[in-house]
Length: 433
Image (tube, rainbow, N blue to C red; front, side, top):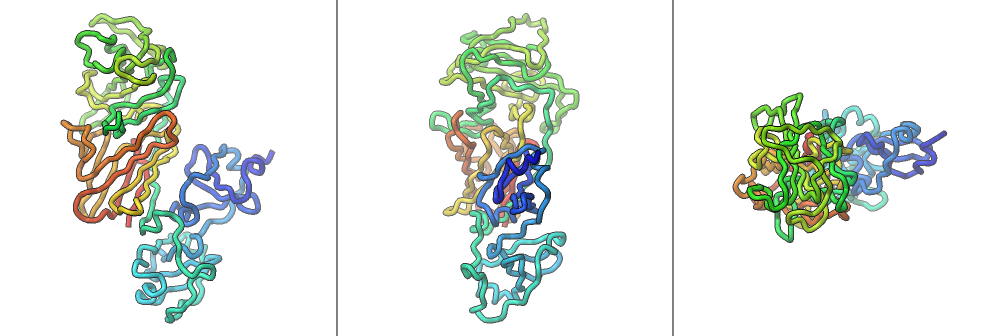
């Protein structure tokens, strides 16, 4: 059966479930390859129209041509030669003979339109005649000017995707049947105010079963209203302790344990334990039911994971996605604000709330915010949304939101020339100029 023929049509953008590569279905039913994201964004503004296919359906589409930059969008040069060319129809290259000519034809901002092409891909283009020296030289037959397609290109930014790895936590289970997230780890809006969230919130209904995410032992149980509970707002709480075979190095120390916290439970279904007792739990074992105990205003499970040895609120809370098994497709995106070049919009798919660190470079100075290690964050005032001359403005997010969105603005001295956002595994996206 020819899966590709029924799953995708000519002109569709497609990708597999397990790989980030995006293809264009050609007139022969094959898949033309975008060699990098810069080429992709010369044709498209975003990934919204990309269709996800199975690996088998992708394999059924034969490899076709390699995509070149969209004609009349950029100037190009090889990585080993300083000559700059205009890339026109059918990959035809016309050399720009001087900086004066480049400024006359393409404006004073022409250097921001130049893209490096790898020597491997340079053979996809064909050299034509040089531009002549007249200001009336034809540039593009269709519209007479270079018009970069994406908003990043319009402001002179180059975008790179950062792919490092993804550690599949096959031994970890999701704590609820529901996988609908209604709040992210780190920056969020709470009742109209900025708040640094120490876990993730999973939406559900009262009575939904809650499971242990990993093998471990019951470390603490707190009931709603219990005297001495450190979770005055958390209602019914269960804390589990988990041993780690391979130590995690966190802030210069190796840790062999982590703790998972389950808050706002409606019921706790494991017995209370005496101080010297040990109650063993297995991954997937029911420990309670979802609810809205404490000060929760909606039914949900608040899940925290903390690295440390003591199982207290002094242990560092880290993004639970560091432990949970989930579909990491590196959905992070950055777009510059068209009116403020120091302001950027970060977006992430709602199923992949794993934003971990922001790097902003102005000149030779790089500012860092790391939500897990708290680098760049005032430990005594985490609920302040201005860190290290960077303002964080998360938009409202709930169980009905399509994406997680957050504006970031650099308010330090100088202009931003490089910004990078990465997830908990080091994957992400970078803009630079």
